[in-house]
Length: 258
Image 1 (cartoon, helix red, strand yellow):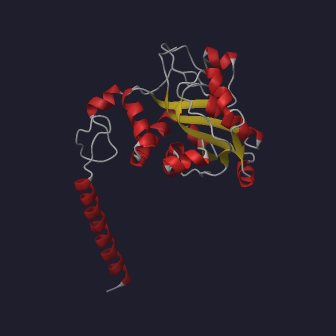
Image 2: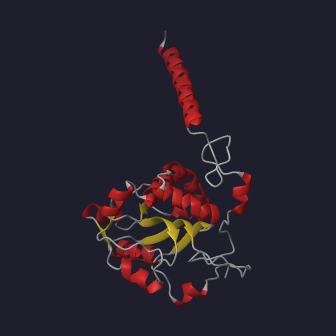
Image 3: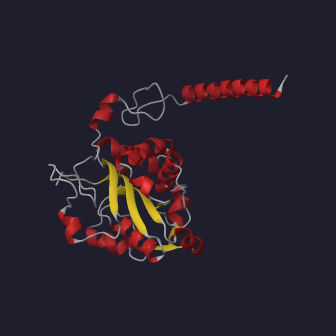
């Protein structure tokens, strides 16, 4: 058998093995909608009913904070918060409002070990960035403190960042930014308490400083609420050599359109 024939034979066998493995996985873990558990034809999907309940954040929105406007006010318009208290990052984009199915997806990823959802969620995030990912040099996830990482076994922001890196080909720097002290959970805290909770909570490793120097950073997190966490992380990145920071999250708390 010639080398080319052997290669074709190997490809055929390998493909059949992959198909067989996929069939076994589908039998043990049938593809289902993560929102309502109705069976689907493939994994990493959402049923039509749950899809229609998602509130994707699309234009018109604030060019800096990404907060949606109820009416189109023209290009380059900023929201009141971006004008009164400009954030340290250059821009923020988010895929969906943090309610309904989106909240379920975040909860499943964080607390039910559904890391298989990360690629689908990452795809929505890249779409929401509307080309801005291409302007960044490196991807950095918001880190967990090592105690929480040990308890949870993985960092949900890092899983999203890893999936985005695969989709875009951008370098991923997982260990560059560290959370140097344990912080309280931000859920239930007010704006001031959230800011105080994360103040001084981040640092950059020596290797991270070299990797970040002069780079445009894409900072990844799962949920944006008040912005205290990503603002503190951005300041740390900027102090340690990053030229610019853009923020991309999967979901954001959203009372209503501005």
